[in-house]
Image 1 (tube, rainbow, N blue to C red):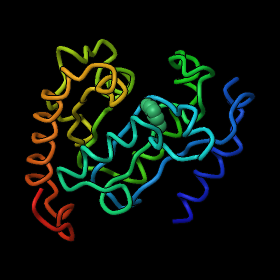
Image 2 (tube, rainbow, N blue to C red):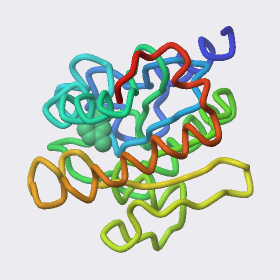
Image 3 (cartoon, rainbow, N blue to C red):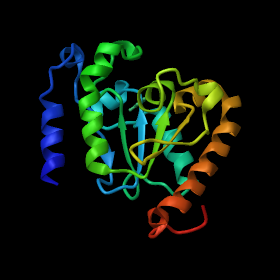
Image 4 (cartoon, rainbow, N blue to C red):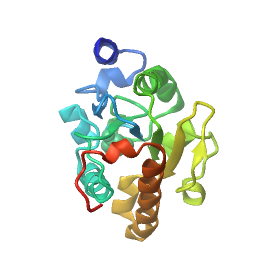
Amino acid sequence: MEEWEALEQACHQCHNCPLANTRTNVVVGVGDRHADVLFVGEGPGENEDLQGEPFVGRAGQLLDEMLSLIGLYRDKNFYITNVVKCRPPQNRNPVNEEMKACRGFLDRQIQLLQPKVLICLGRFAAQELIRPDFGITREHGIWSLGEDGIWKIAIFHPSALLRDEFKRPATFQDLRAIREKIREVCPQVYANIKAPF
Ligand code: URA
């Protein structure tokens, strides 16, 4: 756990990019530090910046509700973080230099966690962690096994689901695929979770 504390401290002290000047809190990540399942979003929004926790606004509430349907809970069996740990002002998209400046923290989180399954929430995380030209509309729900041995998939970002309800059925199908992959490669994720899901 000391390694996690060191990582958290380094994040909190970070001034590697200009987002440090406008943040309220660094949003490092939350969840089970032994989890086999990792979710990665884009970057903190206003609520996350104020509370220091990822996905606590409307999009986060929707995400938690959807994940509970496949037996996943942030306090029990997954870890969740973002590509950038500080809020881009006005919720604009993070720029390349910001993502690059933050990448070492994400890599360290992946190294410490050693997840079996990694789920990218939206295009930014997918382009960072799966392939630079990843197309979320075309390629959501498709598994790839990385050279690092981690199964990776991307689903629509929950903010996109709030904007466009017609994307939800596809996401429910992707969530079922995630549940099946977990049952296949790391069934212990569900060991202490009550059915049905
Ligand atoms: N959107 C993200 O990508 N991450 C958060 O933490 C909140 C909203």
